[in-house]
Each structure stands twice: as C-alpha cells, then as structure tokens.
Image (cartoon, rainbow, N blue to C red; front, top):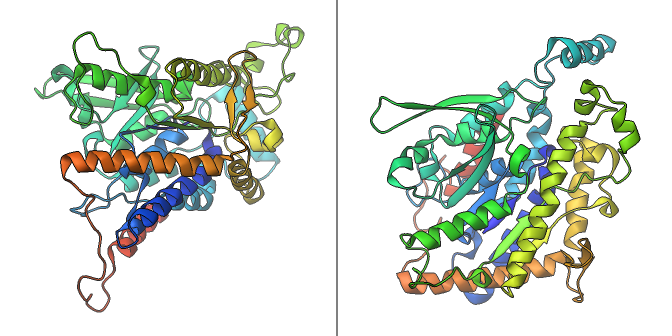
Length: 439
C-alpha cells in the first residue's frame, strides 16, 4: 500500500518521490522484459490501496483517476505529471479572497481573520480544477482502490472514504463523487471553506449529509488507516485480491509492503512554550506570527505517533517491507517553506530541491528506544531503497498475474497508422489533463 500525507503546496515533496518510484518501476519492468510495455507502467498498477490526506488525497486521486474514454482504464496522470501540476497551478489554487497587493489588502485580511470571518482563500479555482479532473467519476471508478479521510464537523469525528466494496448497508458510499471527496479532504480550516454534500442511499429516499473539513485534523498521516483497511479486507475473506484466512489464523503483517511519504515535518522545537501559551488569547491559539498554533499541534500530535505505531506493529511482525520517507528540519525545511500556502516560485523550487535531496539521503527510521528518526546501519539511500521496493512490488504483481492469468492492458501506439490530426493515447490524455487544469 502507498500512503501520502497532507501538507498543502508541500505536496511537491512527495510528488518528486513518487516520480522517482514510478521510474524505478519502469526500470525493473524493462530489466525483466525489455520488449514489454514497461513505458506505460504506473504506480496504480502496483498498489492494492493508495491512501492520501488533504493534498495527499488529491495526489492519490490523480494517480488513480482513469483517462476519459479509455476502455483499458489507464491512469490519466503519470507520477511525473503531478509535480508539474502543482508547480503550474499552485498559485491559482491559493488565490486570496482579496487579490490586491496593497496595505488595503493586508488590512482587509486582518479584518476577515479577526472580525468578519470566512476563509483566507477562494475555493472556486480549486473546485474548478478538481471538478474538471474527476468529472462525474465516483470512488467505484478508480483504477486501483483509494482511501481518503476527512473530518466531519457535525459528527466531530474522522470519516474515511474508500473505493473498496463495503457491506451491503454501506454500498452507497461507493457512489460518492471523487470531486466531493477531494474537496472535503482539502478544506483546511481558515484556508478554504468547509465542503458540504449529500449522499443518496439506494432506495432514493434517505439522504446522508456530510460537513467536511481537512482530513489532516484527524489523520494527516493516513498510513495506519490504510493498514487497518487492508486488514479488514483480509479478515472479511471476500476480497479476491487477498488469500482468505484459515480458522483462528491472524493477519500476517509481515507480508505487507508499505511505502509512506510525508510532506515534511513542520515541527520546530522551541517555537512555543508554556509561559507564552499561558498568556495567549483565544485568537492567538488560532493565529500567531503567521502560524496557526492549534492546527500545528493537532497535526504533530498524530503524524509522528502514526509512524511510531506503524513501525512498532510491523517490526513486531519482523516486517522489513516498511519505508517512511519524511523531510525534517535538517533537510532544509525551515521558515517560509513550512507554510501550506507559500506558492511563490522560489519556494516551490526549494520544495522540489528538498524532495530531490531527500532521495539521496540515507534511509531513516523511528528508533524504538529513542523514539526519534535515526539513520539505519545500511548505507542505502532512499532512492536505492525505492528501487528495492520496486523489485518487491514487481515480484508480487508478477505472482498475482501468474495466478490470475491476466496482464495489464497493452498500450501499443504503433499498431495502426493515425489519421492526420489524430493524437496518440498518451498525447490525448495529457492534452485532456492540461485542458481541464487550465479551465
């Protein structure tokens, strides 16, 4: 399974990592079968489940959304396209409600934050891009299963949207539009307005309301949610992708292959202390010196401990197939780079560099004694470890295809001559994606 954290424009960091992973998958396929269709290898081919929160949920959806009108149901986006998408459209997504760059704009923003209320950004551009990307597609239409958490302010709990088959009473949840799921998980408090929609039940009479804000409020790192969902599918014994358990047999987590990618830890030790916090007004808990303390605290309260719990669970099963890639302060992620909405070109370039440098960094892991990220005995870099995981994923997929006697639909763009003005499948898909993004 693949898991991607939330983090706004810092989604550029996992975008770089994912592009590298997909290239490694192509390399492994080419080495095994040079005459095969390795150039069309996609991340969605290799994971039973892609989980993502907030910006990670948008990335998960992009990786799993099928090309419009493609009977082979190939993904619309290659991993390398995601970085370009963020880089090109980040500034239009984070569009201030007040767009003038002046003292009046600053005063208007302060008035909005402290008096009038409402979000910092106009969600219309984001909504437009998501709607054009996903159209009327639902969770049931993805090329592989995805899982996206959001937080329901009416119920005061995290809700999880998954494209897995659900029990009979929950089947309508598969009918959720991908656009609603993406808009819900990306509705960061104070940044974008909450997203409300209704889910229609199969009898056509009952309706189920959702009042959603950013999934990072409850699960910014969705790795444990993904593991729990896969375990649930195995325990139910009805999913053909997994071997049913024998009576009294437990889930064997040592067989899991898990890659978890963060958007960078924004934790800066010493930024807050008890004496300062004791003097804060209610407003300062929400907004202080350009930061949002209570949001930072909620996010950090879960991120690191999810990684710790996952490491403990999988290490206890002697599982060596867990890789967490996360940028830390020592990787250069400091100051304005920590902001969710810093979309200036210089900052986005720096975030891409952080991702590229992270690939060359030695593999780190949570130490069970110190409870800190520590370098491992191996001299292997994250990029080299991704190559090892690509080999494991290839072997697992080959084993399953051997059992099912199936093969990924071959995309041969040279089978027949194209008429004048026609486009190949890849060109058409890219043009479609660019056109939807531009609109």
